[in-house]
Length: 306
Image 1: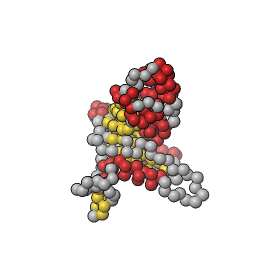
Image 2: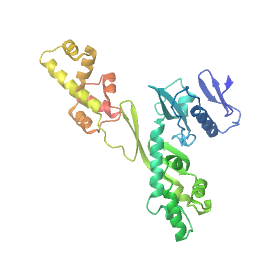
Image 3: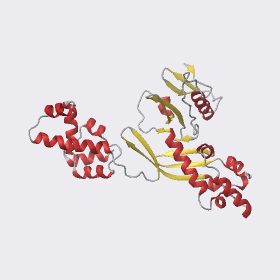
Image 4: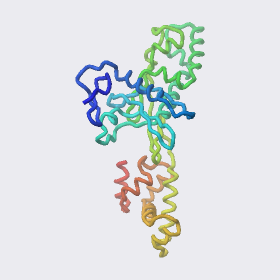
């Protein structure tokens, strides 16, 4: 076994475990250092790529109280950043269906938007401070409006707790007081917490995040495949074989069979797909992979579990 860091964790093979000795470095500080090292890594000579900091490193926590850690991967030459549950890093030997893996840019943009709403709402200066004169409140209101940059807003966040359906943001009272030019004692502690509905929705392989209720979003790929499946089913009914359709369309026979099956979805399921109100996991990939039942009542039971 080898010590992975001075955070009290040890690595054995591909897994990381909590050690028995006290951490020398706080895990939150360690995560920030690792993030800085990743983002500051050298790039190839001549590359114009500019590393982007994970502005919420050490500030995001899931419903179990575990901190999300910053991570990244490369796809088609692009660096994609994420915030992921620590258990995905500590234990890679098994799946963690309840773990979080959130696109970093979306999370940062969403929380910056929420912070902006909180800081610039009507009456924010009065609500967020105590015992100030009218002139001082005018000054505070102006300074709150000046907190417009994403980096400025996210720096004011001390901690964000995520759970399915909602999130809670705690502001750094001392930093906010410093930004406004007043004492921490003059900041209303009750206004340092923001709660908001929070939804995730998967569209194909892409995960989208929303404040409040996620709007209905039509899966156009699924809709197009259903229309194609109905067209191919009509050809089969008139006597065409799957092989003949595949040759004409330039696809495999298996693909024709899989897509044609989509025409057998229940009418109310099709209505939901047409209006974007189907379950999040009901995608073309899911329907082809699971070989759903052609019995409509069984479809309802199967899709209700998504």
